[in-house]
Amino acid sequence: MSFSIEGKTAIVTGAANGIGLAIARHFIDQGANVMFADMDEDKLIMECDSLDCPQARYFNGDLRKKLTIANLQSATIDAFDRIDILVNASRQVLPSNPLEPKADSFEALFQQNVLANLRLTQSVAKIMIQQAEGSDEISNDCIGSVVNLSSIASDRAHPDLLAYSVSCAALNQMTRSLAVSLAPDRIRVNAIAIGSVMSANLQSYLKDDDELRDQMAEVTPLGRIAEAQEVTEVTQFLAANSASFVTGQILTVDGGRTLIDPMDTAVH
Image (cartoon, rainbow, N blue to C red; front, top):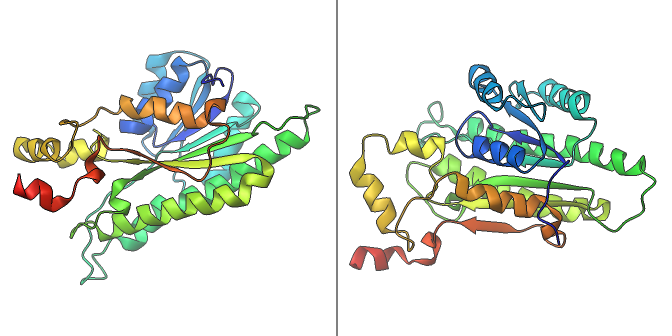
């Protein structure tokens, strides 16, 4: 089995900061061609300019729009001729107010965290299938890999994060369903459910709140908050042939946090 993604072409969404950026930069270091996709054009330009290599390109746009998805794919094909890996790392976290529909973030988060990922995956999968049809090579190897970035919030209820929790649960089920649907076409679909990892969202949430940071580390068996880079090699594993018989799985990266009964942490 090979962990190599050298020469592969990947689209990484949410690549302007946080975990998405860490994954995109790691893939570049591993020899992959990477299309950095995000809505923050200034940050994308800065990051790709800092890399200064032809394997890194960027695309700016709102992936909730179908035309933007088509343009992203065209830009990737124009730059690298093919698409082998899709990492849906773009996530949005907003507070929910279920009693005030106008203020609730449910529809916005479902569009961003579920539907945008679904549409992009469906569209990229068609390209992967077309690429395989145009190849003379006959193999049982998978022709493409999709990795979705989810959260342990899918299994943990939080009073202020109803919309985010539901969107993550939907993303997990979408991962399983697409894995089954795309398996005959030899496309694998998996997800990574992150816990206390220093994403851009978590960094903003913990800003100037050392007490909350300490509490979060305390309820994590490994006793700390992970860095974004600690998700990158897990993503590479799922994207590469090393995970050739892994599909439809939700791989949890949380330092053991979901293993603990909340009452147990309260007692101690």
